[in-house]
Image 1 (tube, rainbow, N blue to C red):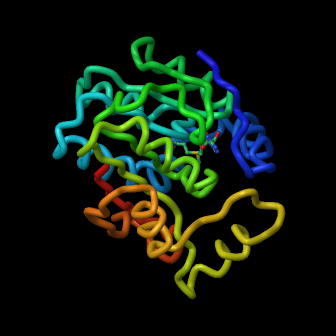
Image 2 (image 1 turned 120 degrees about the vertical axis):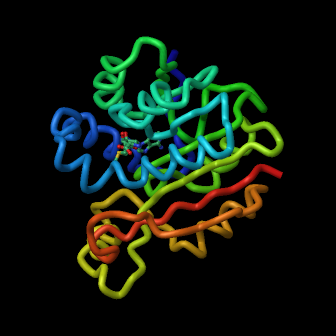
Image 3 (image 1 turned 90 degrees about the horizontal axis):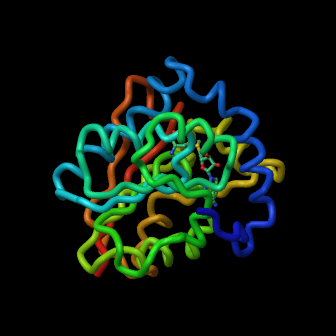
Length: 217
Ligand SMILES: C[S@@+](CC[C@H](N)C(=O)[O-])C[C@H]1O[C@@H](n2cnc3c(N)ncnc32)[C@H](O)[C@@H]1O
């Protein structure tokens, strides 16, 4: 199923999705996954397990590594993998025939109100229109449902190269600080339950990401 991909005021969104379409094949390289993408996914899986979530969506699912892992390890009733890049989704679809893959933007989720227990997102939130996406996360969750968002926060003084990249006009992303992220969640109607650095085998200045957990009030 496909929905319109208009994403509010993120005019450069198509650049992001085209970029990921082009790199989709290289994206699954084992070393890249192990060092960069797997650590936040491990934490999201642990959060979902402890919350006992049964109906889950992974937003900005990319090639579907986390989504299919959720299916395999947690056996939910239903899991959606949603991404705006057809190239990334094509790789994802090859991973599982039972995950519900959807080509859609985080800001316009093709899901019903209160349909889910959990909405998660790893390494993608910095590309979203944050208030619009969080409004959607809130809408599709049941009261008490959780969101777990792991994203880059290049605010440490040592993270200069990453700051330069993410502040360049050529980089169509804005990575909010941890504090801004808490405020964004609260403004969207979430109670922030926890926020912590992602544990990984690299110094945190190199990949300065944080996971924030919110509960829909
Ligand atoms: C770095 S990848 C992360 C993929 C995956 N979550 C992971 O942990 O490996 C970022 C993904 O976000 C997707 N994306 C970017 N902006 C989006 C938006 N507004 N709505 C949905 N997906 C988006 C891109 O197409 C890309 O697949």
